[in-house]
Each structure stands twice: as structure tokens, then as C-alpha cells.
Length: 211
Image 1 (cartoon, helix red, strand yellow):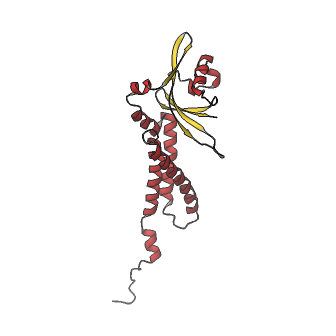
Image 2 (cartoon, rainbow, N blue to C red):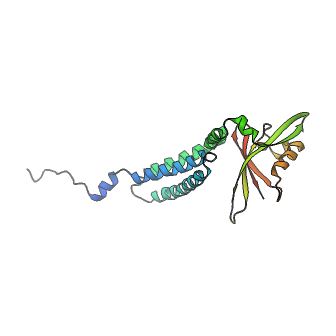
Image 3 (cartoon, rainbow, N blue to C red):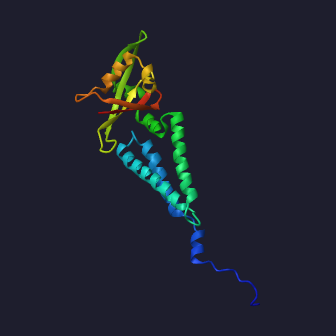
């Protein structure tokens, strides 16, 4: 062989690493998305599993953001596209939920509350008259949680409100409806504050009530 003939360069250990697929990043992204979306879907179906999945998803999203920033200082950030796609999927899902109402949490709730007639029969109902018509607002179920730091006690309460007043501004809610909601907020210890609500499915809402 001619000694002047160019020989193919042997792959170096570093070059081999850069050619490898970032499988660890793929696994991390999959676990983050599973926690983020699975936790929401299982909110009503399996609350205990949902709690841990949501923690995994939230922790993974924070780590993904920090990891993505760190990739900006690497010469060949192979993980950057995967991390960016993960965060974009999470953000896009939040926007879709805001438009569609309920999202994965709503899908899980519809399975949990089926059949609706039997589920509504178990709700605590409060009747009120508005504009000469009878209406009913119902409190169906609640789960306690501790938001903030230091944590305080609050409740996520499923409310059935065919009037849709839960999502209306305070100025557009009638006094009759407010009195009915007051009964929903009333407990043996105190009157809970209404912090806001999101639509779960149709006339069902998930309201936050706190001390």
C-alpha cells in the first residue's frame, strides 16, 4: 500500500460519544411527560398515584428547563432538541386545556363520574331562584391539599353549576346564586373562601376553597 494514501480516521472515544443517541435524555423526557400527563388524567381515578406522578412531572419539567439552559454552554448539545420538545409539549398541552376545558383531568373525571345521573344523585344540592326560574348548584366531592409556604389547608371541590356563574366575574353573579354558593362554602369550622374554578366537563367545575 502506498504510504501516501490517506487512511480513514479512526473513531475516537469522544467522537463515538457524540454519535451515540442520547437515550438517557429520551428516558428522562418520557418519564417527565408520563408524570405530567398521567398525573392529571388519574386525578379522580387514582388520586394517590396521581399525586406522585404530578410530583415527577413537575420535578422533571424544572430539571428539563435547567438542563436546557446548561446545553447552551456545551459544544454539541445533543439533548437540547429533546428537552426543548418536552417543554413545548407541556406548554402546548396547557394552552389546549385552557381552550377545550378540562383537558386530561376532564377526561379522567368523565370516566370517574360515569354514569352522570348516578354521580349527581350523590351530590349535595342547593336550590335557588334566579330571574323567576329555579336552579340548583351541587357540591359533589372534595379533596384536601396544603398550598403555599407555610402550607395552609384548602379543598378542591367538584361543583355542578348549570348556570356557569362560577366562571363569571363577581359583578355578574346574582345575589341568589351567591347565597347558594355560600352554603357550599359553609363548614362546621368556618366559611371557606372561593379562590377560583376551572371547567372539568360540561357543567362540572373544579373549585378551590380555602380557609
